[in-house]
Length: 192
Image (cartoon, rainbow, N blue to C red; front, side, top):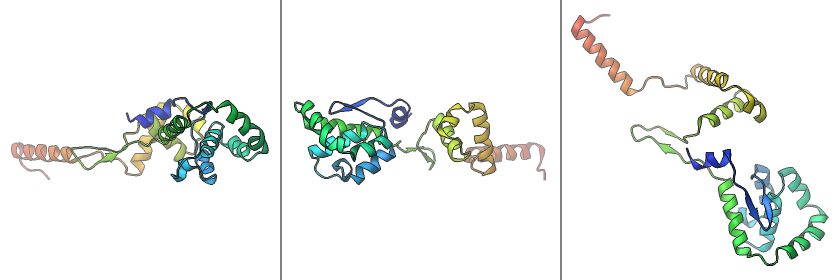
């Protein structure tokens, strides 16, 4: 299984500037871009970028957006936090934050089958079912997690069959069938 799926199923804890960072959400990324974080814009990283980015990601997304714009953040928390973290190695902390972003944004690698032209991400069974239940059947994340696996499999098979998404026969099957038919015709005579 690809490491991205393992990390998504069981995220590791990350810390930066003494703060525990939350799982990275899309909202965090949009907020960091709005704040012109150098971690997103790929410009040289300043201490302000590091502090703001760590603060944003140390809070759940909706709270982070409110808190980073508050006067309490600007005039009380930042000076106290700066004093508390003054002896930390900021280059090491920036590297920690960069590694957090890299790990949280991990994307599954595409796998290629040597025997044919097929490509896939190798996504685990449970991720495929979760995705299908949410996108195709409109279940919420919580509802999809509580949905029985046997029923999920039946829905998946039915959905694939109705969309002609499954290639039930491959070239080997066709070649085997043709050879069996040819042997049968040779032994018993050609039939219609």
